[in-house]
Image (cartoon, rainbow, N blue to C red; front, side, top):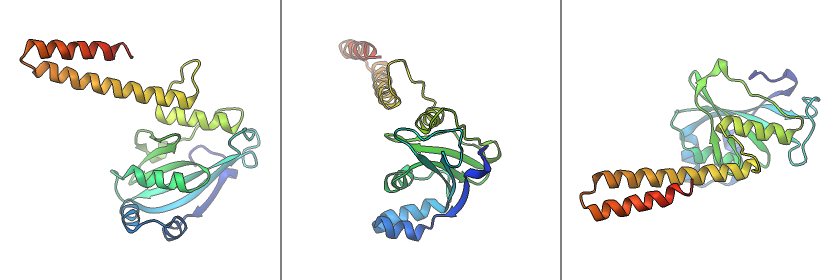
Length: 199
């Protein structure tokens, strides 16, 4: 399953009622969670004991793969983030809706892959230890290219800042295109020029 060794499989149900009790969710959190999520299973444990060729890392000794059946494709990401924050383990989520699936992982923020057909979904385990395997999974899911001199976390922050600057530039370019006054147009142009220097 997902191209993972059979030894990693555990298929243990994760009951919503136990999640509600353990994490003391508010009524609105429970309602939102229940509106999005149908069923949850811990399907795999990736660890040195289940894959002897991959050693435990300095930070990560193992991680779970949790399969979630969604009631709707446009789910609220905060519900997945809730699970990631409350369960004291590294988790890779496989989100299912009908015949499609999406991988999601929390590393400083929730990072999601594109949707794809369930039967084509593979989870790549590349790296000599679980720290490297985890970082490679995060980079693959988020299509993140770590530039030389950056850690994965630094690269994610850098990419976020770049995305914000690009969004500001796009907004100012729209304003400049619609502006009638030459003076205001010039102001927008100068602001755009300054922002482009940050890229």
